[in-house]
Image (tube, rainbow, N blue to C red; front, top):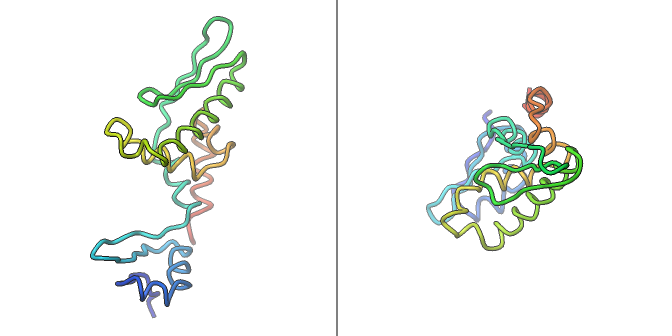
Length: 151
């Protein structure tokens, strides 16, 4: 018997909420329809791993004036500090602040609207995952993605 994974109304979804989460947890494509618009339901851990795997960070770290500056071109955030690691930590803090601001007001601004995937990645990652993504630990990201893929 195939798992129930498409829910055609808010009422049906509410009645079968456990089924919605069970299907999403299994890694199945799970949708909910409300007012003729479909939404996808998926595990936050799986989405975060997918974004870290598919979205290159493009982060740059440069030595400057006896310290380090870390930034992502095209994103209005940077980190700076005396050490490389501290500059990355500062960039992570800046990304978290940007994600908060994006959700509060920047998402509607045309020059910020395209950063949704980045904001999702930031919000669905812990600091260690963000650090690995920023500094290019591709093997760690691939191993994490494999671990989250349902068997």
